[in-house]
Image 1 (cartoon, rainbow, N blue to C red):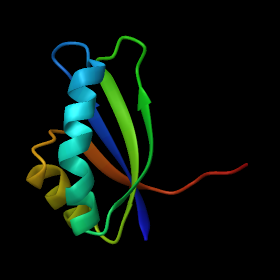
Image 2 (tube, one colour; image 1 turned 180 degrees about the vertical axis):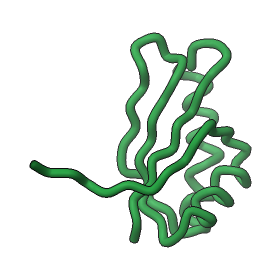
Image 3 (cartoon, helix red, strand yellow; image 1 turned 180 degrees about the horizontal axis):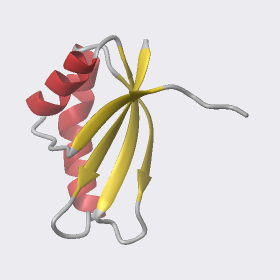
Image 4 (cartoon, rainbow, N blue to C red; image 1 turned 120 degrees about the horizontal axis):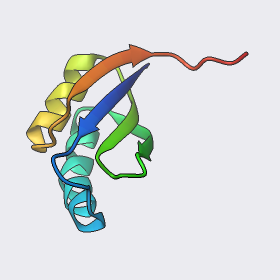
Length: 83
């Protein structure tokens, strides 16, 4: 499985309620496409969020997010860096 970073940008600060709504929609879609959420990091102004996922392909991750109607700005493959 490969690691991917997904960057989300918001027009207004992300509320806890909006985040919960997205999570309820996306969780079943991630499972359907075999994608695993690993971690999320929300900016202190709540205008951007970075999420880490594990997936066989970027297409499966894109399909899962699109099926759940979760918009994202960018996605890129990555690996864990340890010094």
